[in-house]
Amino acid sequence: MRQPGYQGQVNPLIADIERTIARLTGVLQGSAPRPASAPDDPRWQVVVVGEPLNAEDFQARESAREHLRLKVQSMGIRMVEHIWLWDETGRAQLVVAAFVEEERALRLAQAIRDKGLEVRVVREQPRPDEPN
Image 1: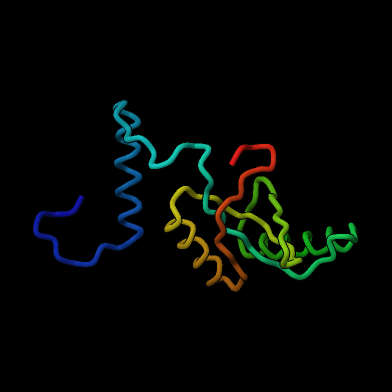
Image 2 (image 1 turned 120 degrees about the horizontal axis):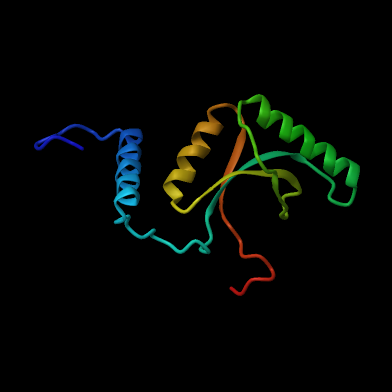
């Protein structure tokens, strides 16, 4: 933790590490703080946006998705699962991460943007079978 009387700027990465250490310590000691939101609360999704696609043409849609998947992979982003979004923009959109805290989603989005990919941060929408 910071020394008493510390006057400098706090590096966001160091602040993240300090919060993580505090959480892990709490888990190990059985006194972990409760999360700010329930596990079922919508999360902030980091979405990489690809080329336009024709949602009616299965082959064209799969081709646009495959192109985006390979582009993301070539940037060093490894996906365990591919979650695709659809909206009125008509473009391939791949969810690369989801966070409870918007700040963390924005930081990751900027890091991906710095690699040359188009990125959006959106609030997760409830599934149609879930109550609002």
